[in-house]
Amino acid sequence: MTRAPPPQDKDAAARIGGPLRNALAVAMLILIALVLAAGVGWRYWRNGEARQSQRPPASAALATAERPFTLVDPTGRPVTDRDFRGKFMLIYFGYSACADHCPTMLMTAAGALKALGSRASQVQPIFITVDPAHDTPAIVGRYASKFSPRILGLTGSPSQIESVEKAYGVQTLFRHTGPEAGAYVIDHPSGFYLVGPDGRFITELQADGGPDDLAARIQRLL
Image (cartoon, rainbow, N blue to C red):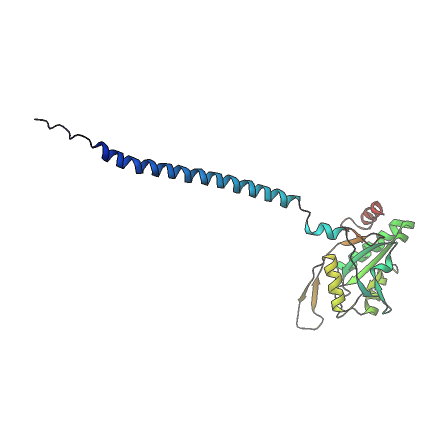
């Protein structure tokens, strides 16, 4: 004979169902809270990205600012950037013991001055050494003038050179190439820095195209 199933205890079912429903409700609330938090976080991140993209680069303020310096000319006389107001400064950083790159760039600058013709009078080319320990005023003066009497060589104390390098964002690296005292190279930038007659930085100029190309780039900015 088949035994009939025992009658269900409705109170017991209610006792079990209540906590289950409560647990499901809590889980749903937690899930909703997580979704909302994720949405808020995503919007915050996107807004942060937008704010970051709208900020000018760190160099933007520097690009429009004056870049002051105090250095020494070939006669030993102190000079500052303000001594060149009214002219465009075409600045190149290098050193007299540079094997090939500096001579090439200074010959390019000299050729560009010739290509500019009468407009070259608006430009003061300046060679600033990154090797103050070796490049005395006399040495840097003789070196720069070999390429053109128009190119002014400037040097200074190590702290003065460090200051002007910082002002122009110039990074250099001194590397020994042998045990001898003069066996070294200094890595440095390969471009020119053009500064306006008001002392404000205009732009960096590459000279890969030779003297005529550099002259054309300068002339467009005069």
